[in-house]
Image 1 (cartoon, one colour):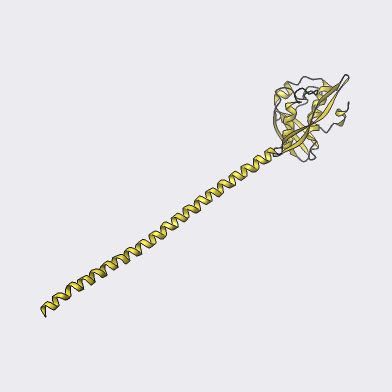
Image 2: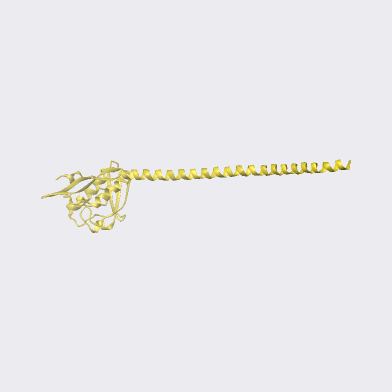
Length: 212
């Protein structure tokens, strides 16, 4: 009887050990599964964040491309330079291409400041050193502001001054929304540009200046 009892104990011990091992494996498995799920979630989140960044970058690139396309498209504006005959001076319209995405009125005045093309028979209207400081349009009135050199470097008589003023007014009134033009120098109204014609009040389009 004693021998039989001694034989049973090792078996019980093995069963207990087995149960303990299974319990450890189950606990370990329970801990591992959530960890793996968390890793998958983190990996997916990283992928989502990466895709969001790529989408944002693509939108930025698309916006840049749209801007470049707009800049590459051109529109025509009309500016007025001085033509001449042996006995007369008059304004001549000239077409210029400027970026479609720009402020077309400002672009037109910038072209006016640049002067005629090289080797052109036309003469410039504004003197060297002239710069556009600002332009705004409200209620049909375009207020254009030039730097002081525009006045100081302008050495013309009364007829020449009339052509300068008509050139500026006619260039801006090519745009339907502009009816009158007020010229400023360094933000201030002056009596005249060259001492002959009043510019303290707005100017209107001058069709007579374009006749030979």
